[in-house]
Image (cartoon, rainbow, N blue to C red; front, side, top):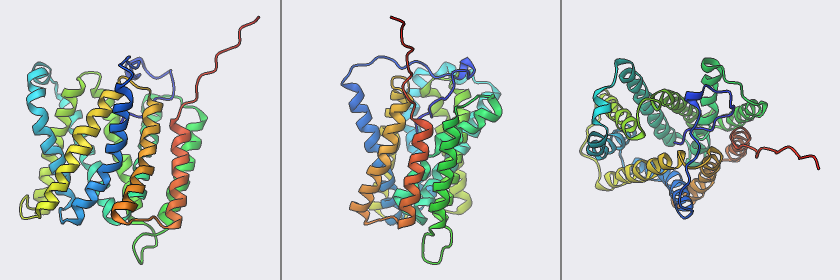
Length: 320
């Protein structure tokens, strides 16, 4: 997931985003297309793996463990010195970030078991709003009024979705509540990443957090007594597609774009991915949201867009 946009220039200088780098014009639409496709297709791949019998905790472990294995030779060849010089505080922060990353992925995947892809992805894209709250409480950042209106509208939409019910007999949609909780976990992961990114490169940080996540998810598999083998070949294939599409393509494309594109552009692409993901779920999985879920999801999208999409700055008129 992309680092959410900042809302106030009075944020402490070390936490401010870097100015986007200039890149070749043809790179930008290509990377944006990759981000859009990966963000839309990854939930479909997760759902397919679940339908093929792969437990959600095993999908999480495969995603983190395989990604760590792929990144290990690159991380230790380029960042070995930085990784060896890590202090205890940085190791503990990276461990905490890995924990919240596992919680985020696990809750996101479990939410897909209880509600449809569209509702889950809509509520997951509320992460930038929950990331802003710790900045207010812990860093003293002052945000514009539209952020608070966006949070209020998003909460209203989430309440409509949750009150719409889910499976037969559910008064409140369990999947919607799990997805919202997962979004807050992702916000905690991104907030911790803010501190670590001032000390580590993106490659070193990603490898360290993914490695911790792989270890934590291994412990989850052991506690739940979920075997690594014995599942269908099709299920493993879909789980592997989650690693390739969601992590190696989507995550790397997002990391590339964060330093080169404005946060507003990324936020808009992620919101478009929600619509595309819902359309693909309808075509491939025959999933359609309930009327209340559709209405609440649209309200959530409005709230997130209001809070995250920046307006262009107005230049003062020169006196003639």
